[in-house]
Length: 322
Image (cartoon, rainbow, N blue to C red; front, top):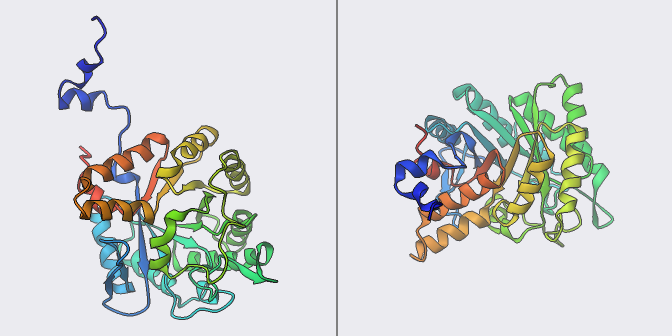
Protein backbone atom coordinates (compact mmCIF):
# COMPACT_ATOMS: atom_id res chain seq x y z
CA UNK A 1 0.00 0.00 0.00
CA UNK A 2 1.35 3.41 -0.99
CA UNK A 3 -1.00 5.28 1.36
CA UNK A 4 -0.76 4.26 5.00
CA UNK A 5 -2.37 6.74 7.41
CA UNK A 6 -0.77 4.87 10.29
CA UNK A 7 2.63 6.26 9.31
CA UNK A 8 1.51 9.54 10.88
CA UNK A 9 0.50 7.79 14.10
CA UNK A 10 3.67 5.77 14.56
CA UNK A 11 4.99 7.50 17.69
CA UNK A 12 4.16 10.35 20.04
CA UNK A 13 6.49 12.85 18.37
CA UNK A 14 4.91 12.35 14.94
CA UNK A 15 1.40 12.41 16.34
CA UNK A 16 2.12 15.69 18.10
CA UNK A 17 3.69 17.18 14.97
CA UNK A 18 0.63 16.57 12.78
CA UNK A 19 -2.03 17.22 15.42
CA UNK A 20 -4.82 19.31 13.89
CA UNK A 21 -6.38 20.79 17.03
CA UNK A 22 -4.36 22.22 19.88
CA UNK A 23 -5.65 23.23 23.27
CA UNK A 24 -3.99 25.66 25.62
CA UNK A 25 -4.56 26.65 29.21
CA UNK A 26 -5.20 30.11 27.72
CA UNK A 27 -8.45 28.73 26.28
CA UNK A 28 -10.03 28.29 29.73
CA UNK A 29 -12.37 30.47 31.75
CA UNK A 30 -12.93 29.14 35.27
CA UNK A 31 -16.37 29.58 36.90
CA UNK A 32 -16.36 30.47 40.61
CA UNK A 33 -19.19 30.73 43.14
CA UNK A 34 -18.96 33.48 45.75
CA UNK A 35 -21.14 34.00 48.82
CA UNK A 36 -21.23 36.31 51.87
CA UNK A 37 -19.00 35.56 54.84
CA UNK A 38 -15.31 35.09 55.64
CA UNK A 39 -12.88 32.20 55.40
CA UNK A 40 -15.45 30.12 53.51
CA UNK A 41 -14.47 27.32 51.15
CA UNK A 42 -17.38 24.93 51.32
CA UNK A 43 -17.49 21.89 49.00
CA UNK A 44 -20.41 21.69 46.56
CA UNK A 45 -21.71 18.11 46.92
CA UNK A 46 -23.13 17.81 43.40
CA UNK A 47 -19.90 19.12 41.84
CA UNK A 48 -16.90 17.36 43.43
CA UNK A 49 -13.85 19.58 43.44
CA UNK A 50 -15.88 22.81 43.28
CA UNK A 51 -16.55 25.17 46.17
CA UNK A 52 -18.52 28.08 47.51
CA UNK A 53 -16.02 30.84 48.33
CA UNK A 54 -16.23 33.98 50.40
CA UNK A 55 -14.58 37.10 49.00
CA UNK A 56 -11.30 36.54 50.86
CA UNK A 57 -10.95 32.92 49.76
CA UNK A 58 -12.04 33.58 46.18
CA UNK A 59 -9.13 36.01 45.90
CA UNK A 60 -6.73 33.22 46.85
CA UNK A 61 -8.41 30.90 44.33
CA UNK A 62 -8.07 33.55 41.64
CA UNK A 63 -4.38 33.93 42.45
CA UNK A 64 -3.86 30.19 42.12
CA UNK A 65 -5.71 30.02 38.81
CA UNK A 66 -3.65 32.92 37.47
CA UNK A 67 -0.42 31.20 38.56
CA UNK A 68 -1.45 28.17 36.47
CA UNK A 69 -1.74 30.38 33.39
CA UNK A 70 -5.54 30.41 33.30
CA UNK A 71 -6.34 33.88 31.96
CA UNK A 72 -9.91 34.44 33.13
CA UNK A 73 -12.63 33.64 35.64
CA UNK A 74 -16.38 34.18 35.66
CA UNK A 75 -18.14 34.94 38.94
CA UNK A 76 -21.56 33.75 40.11
CA UNK A 77 -23.04 35.22 43.26
CA UNK A 78 -25.15 33.84 46.09
CA UNK A 79 -26.72 36.90 47.74
CA UNK A 80 -27.45 37.51 51.40
CA UNK A 81 -31.16 38.00 50.61
CA UNK A 82 -33.59 37.61 47.72
CA UNK A 83 -36.66 39.50 46.53
CA UNK A 84 -39.01 39.50 43.52
CA UNK A 85 -36.79 41.87 41.49
CA UNK A 86 -33.40 40.46 42.46
CA UNK A 87 -32.30 43.86 43.74
CA UNK A 88 -29.15 42.53 45.43
CA UNK A 89 -27.80 41.82 41.95
CA UNK A 90 -27.00 45.51 41.41
CA UNK A 91 -26.17 46.52 44.99
CA UNK A 92 -22.84 48.30 45.36
CA UNK A 93 -22.07 46.15 48.40
CA UNK A 94 -23.22 42.94 46.70
CA UNK A 95 -20.99 39.90 47.06
CA UNK A 96 -20.04 39.81 43.37
CA UNK A 97 -19.25 43.52 43.35
CA UNK A 98 -17.02 43.04 46.40
CA UNK A 99 -15.33 40.05 44.78
CA UNK A 100 -14.62 41.93 41.55
CA UNK A 101 -12.92 44.78 43.41
CA UNK A 102 -10.92 42.47 45.66
CA UNK A 103 -9.71 40.26 42.81
CA UNK A 104 -8.80 43.14 40.49
CA UNK A 105 -6.81 44.80 43.28
CA UNK A 106 -4.85 41.62 44.07
CA UNK A 107 -4.70 39.89 40.67
CA UNK A 108 -4.85 42.76 38.15
CA UNK A 109 -3.75 40.68 35.18
CA UNK A 110 -6.64 38.22 35.53
CA UNK A 111 -9.57 38.89 33.21
CA UNK A 112 -12.64 39.02 35.43
CA UNK A 113 -16.04 38.24 33.93
CA UNK A 114 -19.40 38.17 35.67
CA UNK A 115 -22.67 36.42 35.05
CA UNK A 116 -25.47 38.93 34.49
CA UNK A 117 -28.83 37.36 35.31
CA UNK A 118 -31.49 37.61 38.01
CA UNK A 119 -32.11 33.92 38.74
CA UNK A 120 -29.65 33.73 41.64
CA UNK A 121 -31.14 36.85 43.23
CA UNK A 122 -34.92 36.50 42.81
CA UNK A 123 -37.05 34.71 45.37
CA UNK A 124 -38.91 32.96 42.54
CA UNK A 125 -35.75 31.73 40.80
CA UNK A 126 -36.59 32.97 37.32
CA UNK A 127 -34.22 35.03 35.18
CA UNK A 128 -36.48 38.07 34.96
CA UNK A 129 -39.34 40.06 36.43
CA UNK A 130 -42.58 38.13 36.91
CA UNK A 131 -45.71 39.84 35.59
CA UNK A 132 -49.08 38.08 35.35
CA UNK A 133 -47.43 34.74 36.00
CA UNK A 134 -44.79 34.98 33.27
CA UNK A 135 -41.34 36.48 32.81
CA UNK A 136 -41.72 40.02 31.48
CA UNK A 137 -38.96 40.41 28.89
CA UNK A 138 -38.91 44.21 28.52
CA UNK A 139 -39.30 44.99 32.21
CA UNK A 140 -36.27 42.79 32.88
CA UNK A 141 -33.92 44.64 30.53
CA UNK A 142 -33.51 47.70 32.75
CA UNK A 143 -32.61 45.54 35.74
CA UNK A 144 -30.03 43.54 33.80
CA UNK A 145 -28.50 46.79 32.61
CA UNK A 146 -28.33 48.07 36.20
CA UNK A 147 -26.60 44.87 37.26
CA UNK A 148 -24.07 45.15 34.42
CA UNK A 149 -23.27 48.78 35.25
CA UNK A 150 -22.77 47.91 38.92
CA UNK A 151 -20.25 45.27 37.89
CA UNK A 152 -18.49 47.76 35.65
CA UNK A 153 -18.23 50.24 38.52
CA UNK A 154 -16.59 47.52 40.61
CA UNK A 155 -13.94 46.98 37.92
CA UNK A 156 -15.11 44.01 35.84
CA UNK A 157 -13.58 43.38 32.41
CA UNK A 158 -16.52 41.59 30.75
CA UNK A 159 -20.16 41.11 31.66
CA UNK A 160 -21.85 37.93 30.46
CA UNK A 161 -25.65 38.10 30.21
CA UNK A 162 -27.11 34.61 30.54
CA UNK A 163 -30.81 35.43 30.94
CA UNK A 164 -31.93 34.93 27.30
CA UNK A 165 -34.18 38.00 27.27
CA UNK A 166 -34.66 39.45 23.79
CA UNK A 167 -32.71 42.69 23.35
CA UNK A 168 -30.61 42.45 26.48
CA UNK A 169 -27.25 42.86 24.74
CA UNK A 170 -28.37 46.16 23.21
CA UNK A 171 -29.82 47.34 26.53
CA UNK A 172 -26.62 46.49 28.41
CA UNK A 173 -24.37 48.01 25.74
CA UNK A 174 -26.36 51.25 25.82
CA UNK A 175 -26.32 51.42 29.61
CA UNK A 176 -22.59 50.72 29.84
CA UNK A 177 -21.79 53.36 27.20
CA UNK A 178 -24.00 55.97 28.82
CA UNK A 179 -22.35 55.33 32.18
CA UNK A 180 -18.90 55.85 30.67
CA UNK A 181 -17.93 52.18 30.45
CA UNK A 182 -17.57 51.86 26.69
CA UNK A 183 -14.42 49.73 27.16
CA UNK A 184 -16.21 47.02 29.16
CA UNK A 185 -16.88 44.01 26.95
CA UNK A 186 -19.92 41.77 26.61
CA UNK A 187 -19.65 37.99 26.37
CA UNK A 188 -23.18 37.06 25.43
CA UNK A 189 -24.78 33.72 26.19
CA UNK A 190 -26.19 34.02 22.68
CA UNK A 191 -27.19 30.39 22.28
CA UNK A 192 -28.43 28.97 25.57
CA UNK A 193 -30.61 25.90 25.53
CA UNK A 194 -33.30 24.85 28.03
CA UNK A 195 -31.09 21.96 29.05
CA UNK A 196 -31.33 19.21 31.65
CA UNK A 197 -27.54 19.50 32.11
CA UNK A 198 -27.82 22.51 34.46
CA UNK A 199 -28.96 20.61 37.57
CA UNK A 200 -25.76 20.71 39.64
CA UNK A 201 -25.29 24.42 38.86
CA UNK A 202 -28.78 25.25 40.04
CA UNK A 203 -28.01 23.38 43.24
CA UNK A 204 -24.72 25.25 43.65
CA UNK A 205 -26.20 28.68 42.87
CA UNK A 206 -29.56 28.08 44.56
CA UNK A 207 -31.17 29.26 41.32
CA UNK A 208 -33.79 26.65 40.43
CA UNK A 209 -37.15 28.20 39.50
CA UNK A 210 -39.72 27.93 42.27
CA UNK A 211 -42.49 27.33 39.72
CA UNK A 212 -42.59 26.31 36.08
CA UNK A 213 -39.44 26.11 34.01
CA UNK A 214 -37.38 28.24 31.60
CA UNK A 215 -38.57 26.80 28.29
CA UNK A 216 -40.38 30.05 27.43
CA UNK A 217 -37.09 31.95 27.20
CA UNK A 218 -34.26 29.43 26.83
CA UNK A 219 -33.93 27.59 23.50
CA UNK A 220 -35.54 24.32 22.44
CA UNK A 221 -32.82 21.61 22.29
CA UNK A 222 -34.26 20.45 18.96
CA UNK A 223 -33.43 23.73 17.20
CA UNK A 224 -30.18 24.53 15.39
CA UNK A 225 -31.19 27.18 12.83
CA UNK A 226 -32.60 29.23 15.70
CA UNK A 227 -29.10 29.25 17.20
CA UNK A 228 -27.83 31.09 14.14
CA UNK A 229 -30.63 33.65 14.47
CA UNK A 230 -29.82 34.23 18.14
CA UNK A 231 -26.12 34.59 17.37
CA UNK A 232 -26.78 37.09 14.57
CA UNK A 233 -29.04 39.17 16.80
CA UNK A 234 -26.50 39.42 19.60
CA UNK A 235 -23.74 40.31 17.16
CA UNK A 236 -25.91 43.07 15.70
CA UNK A 237 -26.68 44.36 19.21
CA UNK A 238 -22.99 44.77 20.05
CA UNK A 239 -21.72 41.58 21.68
CA UNK A 240 -17.92 41.36 21.69
CA UNK A 241 -17.92 37.57 22.10
CA UNK A 242 -20.70 35.01 21.91
CA UNK A 243 -21.26 31.68 23.60
CA UNK A 244 -23.02 28.35 23.11
CA UNK A 245 -24.31 26.57 26.23
CA UNK A 246 -24.12 23.61 26.96
CA UNK A 247 -21.07 22.46 25.04
CA UNK A 248 -20.64 18.71 24.56
CA UNK A 249 -24.29 17.85 23.67
CA UNK A 250 -24.27 20.76 21.19
CA UNK A 251 -20.98 20.32 19.31
CA UNK A 252 -22.89 20.57 16.02
CA UNK A 253 -24.27 23.95 17.09
CA UNK A 254 -20.81 25.20 18.10
CA UNK A 255 -19.57 24.23 14.65
CA UNK A 256 -22.44 25.93 12.86
CA UNK A 257 -22.11 29.13 14.87
CA UNK A 258 -18.36 29.11 14.25
CA UNK A 259 -19.08 29.20 10.51
CA UNK A 260 -21.16 32.39 10.70
CA UNK A 261 -19.20 34.59 13.11
CA UNK A 262 -15.85 36.34 13.13
CA UNK A 263 -16.19 37.07 16.85
CA UNK A 264 -14.43 34.97 19.48
CA UNK A 265 -16.65 31.98 20.23
CA UNK A 266 -16.97 30.50 23.71
CA UNK A 267 -18.67 27.29 24.84
CA UNK A 268 -19.79 26.45 28.36
CA UNK A 269 -18.84 22.95 29.50
CA UNK A 270 -21.64 22.97 32.05
CA UNK A 271 -22.14 21.48 35.49
CA UNK A 272 -23.98 18.36 34.33
CA UNK A 273 -21.20 17.50 31.89
CA UNK A 274 -18.67 17.94 34.68
CA UNK A 275 -20.66 16.03 37.31
CA UNK A 276 -21.26 13.02 35.05
CA UNK A 277 -17.54 12.62 34.42
CA UNK A 278 -16.76 12.97 38.12
CA UNK A 279 -19.47 10.49 39.12
CA UNK A 280 -18.43 7.85 36.58
CA UNK A 281 -14.75 8.30 37.43
CA UNK A 282 -15.57 7.96 41.12
CA UNK A 283 -17.16 4.59 40.38
CA UNK A 284 -14.10 3.50 38.42
CA UNK A 285 -16.15 3.16 35.23
CA UNK A 286 -14.01 5.59 33.20
CA UNK A 287 -10.57 7.16 33.28
CA UNK A 288 -11.69 10.59 34.46
CA UNK A 289 -8.62 12.51 33.34
CA UNK A 290 -8.65 11.05 29.83
CA UNK A 291 -12.37 11.62 29.41
CA UNK A 292 -11.96 15.20 30.67
CA UNK A 293 -9.27 15.96 28.11
CA UNK A 294 -11.15 14.22 25.29
CA UNK A 295 -14.29 16.19 26.11
CA UNK A 296 -12.45 19.52 26.18
CA UNK A 297 -10.61 18.70 22.94
CA UNK A 298 -13.93 17.89 21.26
CA UNK A 299 -15.29 21.31 22.24
CA UNK A 300 -12.17 22.97 20.89
CA UNK A 301 -12.26 20.87 17.71
CA UNK A 302 -15.87 21.88 17.10
CA UNK A 303 -14.74 25.50 16.86
CA UNK A 304 -14.75 27.07 20.31
CA UNK A 305 -12.00 29.60 20.99
CA UNK A 306 -12.72 29.72 24.71
CA UNK A 307 -14.11 27.10 27.07
CA UNK A 308 -15.85 27.90 30.33
CA UNK A 309 -15.20 24.78 32.36
CA UNK A 310 -15.11 23.55 35.94
CA UNK A 311 -12.22 21.36 34.78
CA UNK A 312 -10.01 24.44 34.20
CA UNK A 313 -7.64 23.95 37.13
CA UNK A 314 -7.45 20.18 36.73
CA UNK A 315 -6.98 20.34 32.96
CA UNK A 316 -4.28 23.00 33.28
CA UNK A 317 -2.09 20.39 34.93
CA UNK A 318 -2.55 18.01 32.00
CA UNK A 319 -1.69 20.40 29.18
CA UNK A 320 1.82 20.76 27.83
CA UNK A 321 2.01 24.36 26.66
CA UNK A 322 5.60 24.12 25.55
